[in-house]
Amino acid sequence: MSGALGTLLAGALGSLAHPVGSTDGEEKSGEQLLALAAQVERALAAHGVAAGEPVLVRMGNRPLDIGALLGVWRAGAVAVPLSVTAAPTTYDRLRGQTGARVLVDDERLEVIASTPPAERPLLREAALVMFTSGSTGLPKGAVVGHQRLADKLAVLDHLLCFERGDVVLVPLQLTFIFGLWVSLLALMKGAHLILVSKFSTEAMARGLADATVLGGVPSMFRSLLAEAPPPAPRLHKILTGGEVLPPHLARRLRDYTQADIHDLFGLTETGTCDFHCGPAEQPQGFGSIGRATKGVEFCIAANGELQIRSPFGMLGYLDDPQLSEASFEDGYFKTGDLARVTEEGYVALIGRAKDIVSRGGVKIAPLEVDHLLAEHPDVAAALCAGVPDERLGEVLHAVIVPRQGVALDAASLRDWLLQRTERYKVPEVFYFRDALPSGSTGKADRRAVARMAEGNG
Image (tube, rainbow, N blue to C red):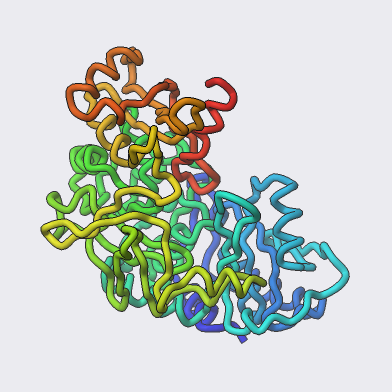
């Protein structure tokens, strides 16, 4: 009982023309991955793992991760991705929240608890539990259904048109839904999948020598373009998502390569890739998230929040029916993103509702100031956030990444901003760093800016 995704993946591996590779030089054929899947399936059955039971799957963007994932699905279990670099506290939390009693790590199976978890009806049709970080409390386990994600892959197949001859380079972690669906789609189309275990310019240079398709988040592209980027002679398609692609970065990507840019926006909870800004919408669509993809509906609520209704969305949050219900309004998922529709009909994000800074009662969208700072000729990247202030309630602080070999100072940046925006939008404090702070998925972490303020820089 492998579920829709297991059936699709098994079929793909059975007819795979190329081994699944990594920039570390490891390769595994489809036959080898199917053998591993069968081994994992037998081991789970021997330990009495039941259908719908969560199983932790340690992933490090290794070819064997694909076989381990398939083995869990073939056993009828639900995969809970866990990064190989996860801290012990993260491991303990996921084990506690899921009640998993087995962990799969490529060819190894470890029993981590003796008591099976209670049966959960929510997991009967589930493929994955993807834990998404929250600003407060424990991360939320979004339960992803087999058929819903399989149906979304069919939409993405039509939208992105991967081909059998493509070489798809994935530096995105497989614990991140973006990295997972790109990898699954590449395999299902018979393309050559190359995984990057740890993002670095050297690893990317090895992969880009042959890659025709590249998936990544804007933070990765900033790093890649910070110095002389490696040659990418065959690259014809770039997929980006996970965070807003600023117009200046989109232009730099176009200057770097003639590849088509597909900017994708979506949430794990809504089935991913709810919006698409593709070549037909560019360059005028740069800075927006484009238009809704097939099957997706949206509205902008009275408070400016973007809300999404999708047939591909999550089944619910694990063990939290109240939160699941509260996250929707009239069938629309409340994203927490503030948005507007442009004159051209594109959806543009203004910022996160929780990120809006109230400086002395005046509202500031940090995303707007990010984009403005990034237009400075000597700024490679910028990230702003609100920080508590005794006098004004909140003020804006900014992390700045200067371009290679350039010296920047706060006074000149303030003067530059004052010529282009209102005084109240100019950050009170600037931190100069070699890279933006980022979380485990590679996304820029706005909350880390506030933590810098707590530590006085």
